[in-house]
Amino acid sequence: MDFPWDDLALTFSHTSMFPFFDFAHYLVSVMAVKSQPGAVALAWKNPISSWFTAMLHCFGGGILSCLLLAEPPLKFLANNTNILLASSIWYITFFCPHDLVSQGYSHLPVQLLASGMKEVTRTWKIVGGVTHANSYYKNGLIVMIAIGWARGAGGAIVTNFERLVKGDWKPEGDEWLKMSYPSKVTLLGSIIFTFQHTQHLAISRHNLMFLYTIFIVAIKITMMTTQTSMTFAPFEDTLCRILFGWQPQFSSSEKKSEAKSPSSGTGSLASKPSDVASDNVKKKHTKKNE
Amino acid sequence: MELLSALSLGELALSFSRVPLFPVFDLSYFIVSILYLKYEPGAVELSRRHPMASWLCAMLHCFGSYILADLLLGEPLIDYFSNNSSILLASAVWYLIFFCPLDLFYKCVCFLPVKLIFVAMKEVVRVRKIAVGIHHAHHHYHHGWFVMIATGWVKGSGVALMSNFEQLLRGVWKPETNEILHMSFPTKASLYGAILFTLQQTRWLPVSKATLIFIFTMFMVSCKVFLTATHSHSSPFDALEGYICPVLFGAACGADHHQDNHGGSHGSGGPGPQHSAMPAKSKEELSEGSRKKKTKKAD
Image (cartoon, rainbow over all chains, first blue to last red; front, side):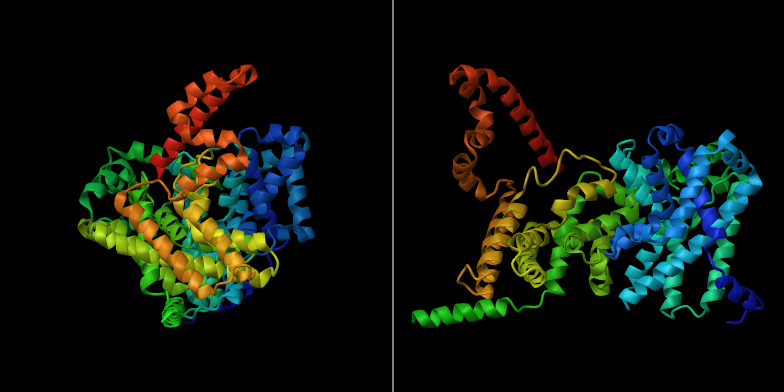
């Protein structure tokens, strides 16, 4: 396939992540840490613990993929420049006089820019994970998908586990199991890139990276500007009905209690407020998980 | 005549230990494992709400032993997932058990004679896994007896040892129940089997590996089939442990087993200092007993 933007995509795919995009990723991650209740107090009381949490948020995906592939989980510490960058961001975010960084970050354009750039790093991570797994397992499709997913979205799992161990969070049924939007989109991307890597998808890699990045950045920015949460609910609903919905006694009750929003959202306007409210709740969960 | 019978037994054991596991025995292993997952409270509802989490749980039930052994030996945790055909087979079994129209597949599999066959075949896989695990650990650590025992044990008991983690995936977090505290029969049997196979591997037990596999498989199959057929949770080791525990660990351990019947009367007969210590102890034992009951319910 030949695209008019071929050259652009090629240059784009050679962009280095290091100074700017990584910076945005660390900034967004550390701000997520800071938005947790009690994080600031913890940073004053126990800086090391807070620093460690911040590092887990920044490098969680890499740690999970290292665990899965039996590489040292502390490998991320060997990358001195990245650690220094992330640590300095942690430091200025938490201890800057007059909280300047947080105030600057609270402007919407800054947030949009940072989040958009963070999504770009996600693409790079997925591609890196898939390629890395392929160097271990030539035909392991599932392994490639899993490692790509772990690199891109595994941070949420690592940080949740850390909170579980610290004891300030308990899995209350759904919260742990509900895949957040980033996890889903990363899983989708991981599957696409794996099929591209095994030549099942007739598209060159830089084009795919370009398209996928534009897709996730656009969705992220739309989500942030319109304050809604984009979900795959309609697709999932149909897919679930095809695959898993053969048993009426379960699916009917499940549809009523759980997946109220997608079915009612298309039809009636009366249930719109509740729909939006549930979306907001969902979004909060997502943010917490990120 | 004796020589002939011994020869034929040896040959039988040898050919038995060379039967390939992959399609049939592995299939029954997956079926029984996922069947146990479906028995867990809330598993069916989970599969309707979060198919992905349910699938992951099913994979843990099928491949937990490999994952745990890989973790212990420092190999990639995800190693077994490169085995595409096994994963596909297990996924198909998971899909059929949870989502088959009218629950047909589940009803067929649950029919007791069919289930007994599958259970028996699962035990064959278990014993073979123990043997392979010990061989593998021996390859890494030639004199590491405990490494061998641990690897074999983990390979044999599978997901039971990581049940806390598996429950966490299902949204249940109960750190107070875990398998090491209340070992079930398969876990104990795997431990004893691992010890036997380690002794054989280090040449302390003068039998060939094929024979040991054959004998231990027969033992496991008969025990497990009997237990499944009678729906009992007791284990054949109970009687043996009742004798050995008081000798090795003193009276406290022995009292733990019979505490339901005469715990109170036991305390009243003792001398002064023991008398004061007894009520606290019996309370602790009572809570232990209730916890045990809870675990059984969870099983």
